[in-house]
Picture 1 (cartoon, rainbow, N blue to C red):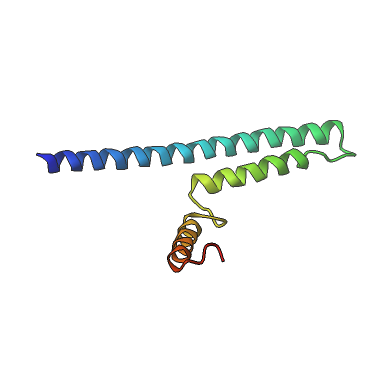
Picture 2: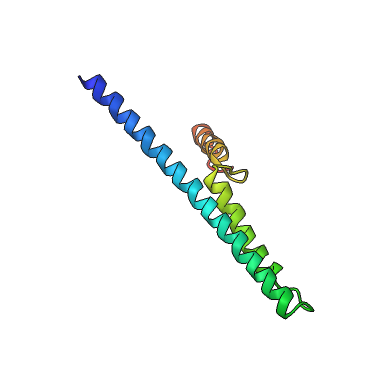
Length: 104
């Protein structure tokens, strides 16, 4: 009986994790759609009323950087200081501790 409960608990936890991942991706796509719509609107306003000064790309650039980081987080893409890096550093520090080389 306990094995069945453990299996059900594991299945439920996997379902909850998958659900969180789907919500993160869904949030990213919502942000992407907003980014496209708002920036097209800003482009229209810029070209219609002040075509001599192109300012629309500044908010597009700022939001685009944030959107890129949001996408990296939503799709678990962390090339900088990701989980692998963290695990390697932990192992490195543990090995140093074993050898008695405290941070050297």
